[in-house]
Length: 95
Image (cartoon, rainbow, N blue to C red; front, side):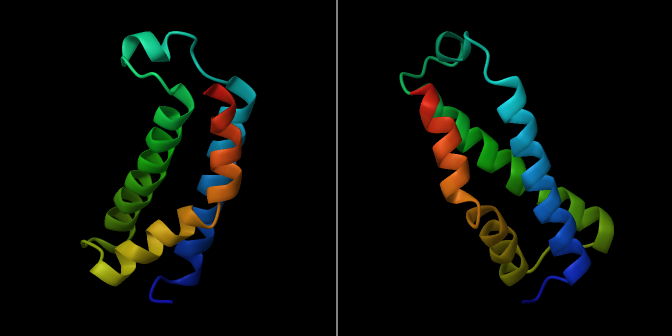
């Protein structure tokens, strides 16, 4: 792994804590109307994954004061993907 262990651990914690927040708060009943999407759960799942990857990439830039390499970028995505089952399972209930 190219990412340093501390950054990977913090990113892992961010994913877990943010998903827990979503589980506690649920979703706005207006999501489907506001964003004109038929499958709200799929929309929210994609939104969440994008949010996690984007937040981790921003954090990487702040911590390391540089852009991640393509390998580091992929490792960040893989950290999110490790939670794919739980993420998809939660958001699928909104479909």
